[in-house]
Image 1 (cartoon, rainbow, N blue to C red):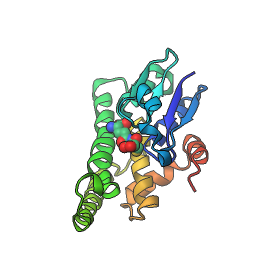
Image 2: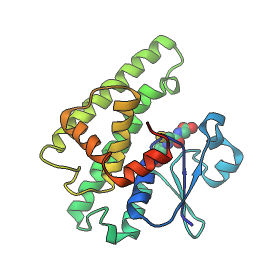
Image 3: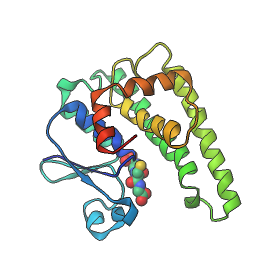
Length: 206
Ligand SMILES: N[C@@H](CCC(=O)N[C@@H](CS)C(=O)NCC(=O)O)C(=O)O
């Protein structure tokens, strides 16, 4: 059965939400970050990147990278309409998704969350964190404009929304930063979806 390798409250929750949206049976395999299980020989043998999310598919093959997993799930479950099929709609969906994962998460949030990955000096780490915070908040202002007059990033719910959702969760509930109005409304709207509620419950999000 399709198995999502995840750790609580990580970006993998976005894929968890998509599996709930699809509604087909799946398994969860928790990866214990507190013991660095993601870097264990067993995990690395399955996913040499040592990260979550990783999706083990029915044929045993492993798919990594949020955008790739989300796109594959959308394309293999077309009846769920998780991504438009016209070139413009598809490109706009991936544009919004990649901004959330590539820019807000990897290039911005990570500075705030893991400053020691960039510099050793503790004073310098504080500056790295500040830059990360500024970058996340500046990026969310861009998203705020994109959300004007829309319920979801590209109008209808798509694979881009769970990607934005996990960044919203980190920014608002982990870091305690204020979200711009349209982003806050999107975050609140996401939390009313049964898929989001189910994955939050499973991952013990308060
Ligand atoms: N580019 C990857 C990023 C995945 C990623 O950074 N995952 C984090 C959790 S949010 C992780 O597994 N971190 C564990 C580690 O770095 O040891 C993707 O899009 O899936």
